[in-house]
Image 1 (spheres, each protein chain N blue to C red):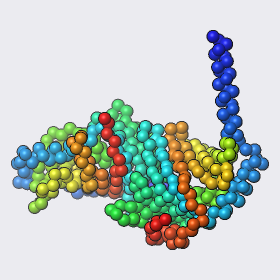
Image 2 (cartoon, rainbow over the protein chains, first blue to last red; image 1 turned 90 degrees about the vertical axis):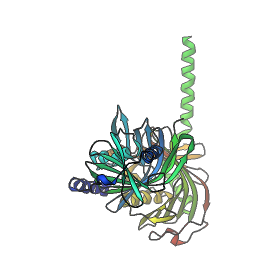
Image 3 (cartoon, chains in turn purple, brown; image 1 turned 30 degrees about the vertical axis):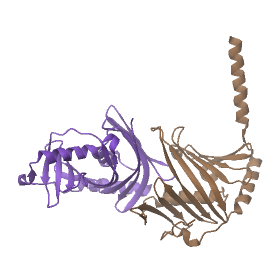
Image 4 (tube, rainbow over the protein chains, first blue to last red; image 1 turned 30 degrees about the horizontal axis):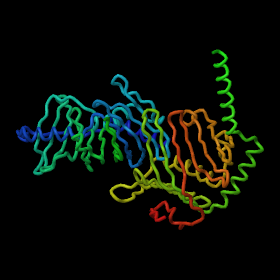
Length: 226
Length: 222
């Protein structure tokens, strides 16, 4: 446990002075294709469930050291509602729930700063599973074989999704805050749920550039509210 | 009417105390005898393979987190804890070192565990209990043994105040006829606890030593 405290202290320092890449494109790269835009927006809707409980295994890698746990995360009406995670042999690691839209952290390792949890892991969860309002969405051609769906939360905060030509669902997502890439997630192992018009990724590989850690999430079950 | 209420309360109290008597606490002499008998029985176990199922009850969720797998023990200090579902993960302890292997993309990969010290402590403790050695347990826990019919329940309550914040108790349920542990309950509070049930044990069937290799994983063909 001392190790985890030290690692998070180092991470906290590095996060303060760390730097991330900027997300950039030129106007000439913007695609004017309303049909493709609608298809991409629909695809991004399909990879999010607004009411479900997910059961998963998580491995976090901080400066080469790995910490694994299993847990559950509930999303209700497009908002993160509650979550808990435990070690292989049962010990509780994290627990949080939301009250009146505020996330209350009720369990965490002693040495882990709350800001690291809120801006790091909870920020990642918010990108992955919560619903957001967007002021605009555009398509940007980024290479010969792929383009991005760029969804603006504000003028400088964007949620970006990579699409390969010919594929219906995104390969990756980027959280861009203040024009900087703070987090990237690689989606894979999509499982279709035709009944709910969903296609949820069961394998997610996250790199958080702000807090300098990687997270591997492997879903083993998703229960939807009937 | 009042008499009926008094009578029903009285009957309930009698029933309650009778039920409690079924889980009777052993006195100090009884405890010493129990641990001697326990150690004598488990000392005969040179290798053990047993299936387990674990159920994690979470205070903030109605669902439980379930997992299952196999546990392998080789006297005196080798332990392998394999989780097979709903995900695959293997912990190997060989007395000197510990390793954790995670299954992803079709292969097991050795993890660079950041919880090395904590895992060593937990698995060495479990290893000691597997051998019937509770000698060091008393330093950390207040230990009480209860008889429940033919069987026994060993209750461990942490002594340390800071430990009590996240661990209320550990209960080990031992079968009376052979003193084998059939169930473990680790309780953080009334709603947050994990139950581990053991079944299908195979004793002294043997496994090769490299089955507990912490450098390279030898796959379970057991």
